Length: 311
Image 1: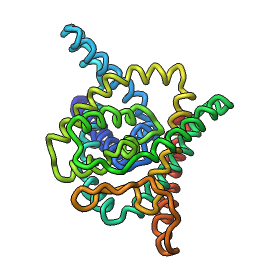
Image 2: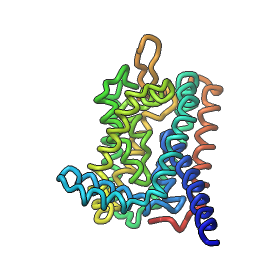
Image 3: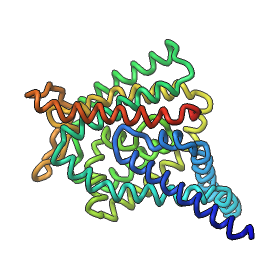
Image 4: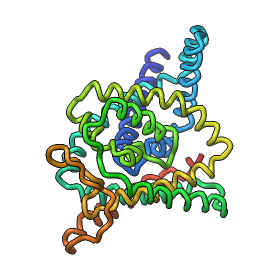
């Protein structure tokens, strides 16, 4: 009598983990919301991080030729959590990429307003995760914000026809958002000028580019998960302060006017998204500002649902 009940319970858990994965994937494809933050809100962050670090140890064993250790580490991964999460994340990315790809081209300023509100809310959420808000942490935050703001002024916009190496590097860097609450993978892609090309690759089913991006993500997890786990355990507040500063500096890219986040125009012309201007008319300001406010309220509201999930 217990076996059917156990199977039903496992199926229910898998279904909810699939939904959690979809929520994480939806967050990851929208700049400003972190998949890691969503995992934190949904109460699965510690389990996810533990499985990621176990997977990194498995790859390390394999590289050393320790096949038995590799298999043992693989068995220690919580696959009942990881597999439905990955399916949900992939489903969300495929389902939403075409919509966002079209809107980035047709409504760049409105989308930038949406992203701007999401990032401002994420800054507030990440600030709430800090245990210590002393002068050292504030100094790290301000310095990182200023450096990011200045460096992003040199960004020309989305990269036109990026190479496979660029997709690999983008995947390795963006995947860090999965294990760092408070920073968005899509935001990192925006900083690298790879957000538009990646969303376009998913929309156009460019399997080679998607596969290389995925391989980069796997390598990035293997290289960074153990290091980031160590840093989070020993210098958590300093790291989070730097991430908050990074997001604050990134608002330069997300300022809606004049060109949104930057797009690829006709004949692969790159249009910069780092210009800072006021809207030409009141009408031009209404939609981006309204979307920014709505996005801010949604993120702060969702985060408030899990006040106990601070760590």
